[in-house]
Image (cartoon, rainbow, N blue to C red):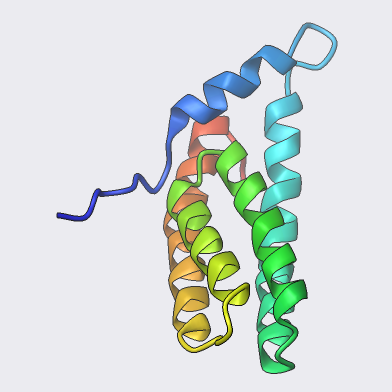
Length: 122
C-alpha cells in the first residue's frame, strides 16, 4: 500500500520558527510569501523546459522547487518535484506533463493551508 503524503506538514514550519526573533517576528511568513509568489512562475518555466525538451534544466528546476517546497511543509508538491527531477534525469520524459499537473494540483491544495498557518492574507 502506498504511503499517504501530507499536503501540508506543519512540523516543517515549526523548524523554521527558530529563525525568528524580536527583530524579525514575521521572517517565516515573509519567506513563505516569497515562495508563494515565485512558485507559479516556476511551474510555467518547467512547462516551457518540458516543451523544449531541456531535461537537465527541468531536473534542476524541479530539484530547487522540491527543496523550497519541503522547507515550507508542502510535502506532496515536494514528492511530485522529486518524481519529475528523477524522470528528467532518465532517458525519456514520458509522463512528465502528468507529474507537472499533479504538482500544480498539490500546490493548489496546500497553498491555502500554508497561508492560514502563517496568517498570510491574499
